[in-house]
Length: 233
Image (cartoon, rainbow, N blue to C red):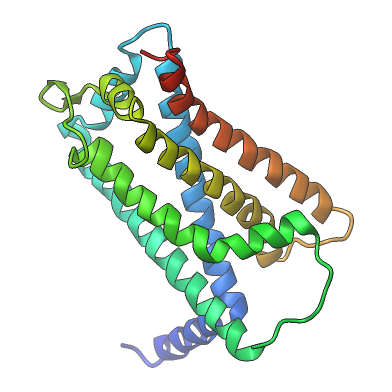
């Protein structure tokens, strides 16, 4: 390592050790994960297409061996983002506990305060759901998966079969409600972490964050409800 590189690395380490550094990491990794959540929703909503095979064609495209390197690169980026997001969040929470073991008595905005409190336990539950979701619809460890051919999972049939079980659908819906609260707090606080905070604009950002979080959760939740109601078959 060159002598010039050492001070730069030390500055990066000191920046990350400070609360603002961890908040910046959470903001950046949060953006990556939010884009994935949004993109994943757009892909999932293809189940409503009048062409029953459209979502299966989309899945076959993603599992095409020609794009295996790209797919695994994206998965690696997402894994790093998830791990780093969780590590930074836990470290930041521990720093806050050490700095202020007894909280201030302060009348906060109720929805904001509630969403902030749920961040501590909603994150691990969402992580557990992701693991379950992968085991369910990717690995096939929860329910047997149907395939149309090599690298062609029958996504539509697997989704309908999975969400026909009320327990699976209920866990999915519960996780999406937690995701909505997690997104709400994460989206608007991300702007604060990146330095965009103003008495005039922050309330607008909070309202937009709430609507985005609600719409994303509603999109995801509509699928198991559609299966249970018989709209998606």
